[in-house]
Image (tube, rainbow over all chains, first blue to last red):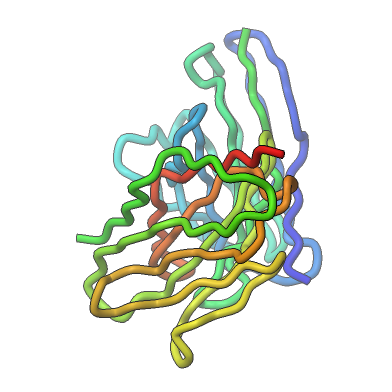
Length: 114
Length: 111
């Protein structure tokens, strides 16, 4: 149990376009999901906390208008990178809170903006 | 302030040898502690977690970790490393809504 999926696993896009990444909890309901960004050989940086049915909470320094988060159901959260630029290229990982204490992570999405 | 320190950036061990990855934390309340493993290009897999009770916790893949409150540590151990254990290991402290990660320890396993 506690499986989280992400789609797509890898995406390449042109600068200026928007990219949507989906995060799904497959076998449990998650009122809270999280979006992280990971730079090469570094740890995870929390970008935002997504709560079902309400606005996401963004960490300091994360542009909410650039990284749009929608958590429309208890099993799905989406991250849309709007007007992507090469500096947005990164590894994006989502997680879902199955219980109050534990996050389960998706396999990640590699974004490359040309 | 909450923080997690993994002092070893990179560790190399021989296959079959024992392993210990260090983790020290700073947390204002009773911590929830986690170890995750990340293979290249993959997400994070939960190895084990500590909430309360027995300070020695068993996880998947033969890993265990010991919580030592007096040392603010939660070191990960494995008695005999397998080549498939080569990965990045992250220690984390907090809970479902406030998880703080260490910078990770990269484990290389040599034949």
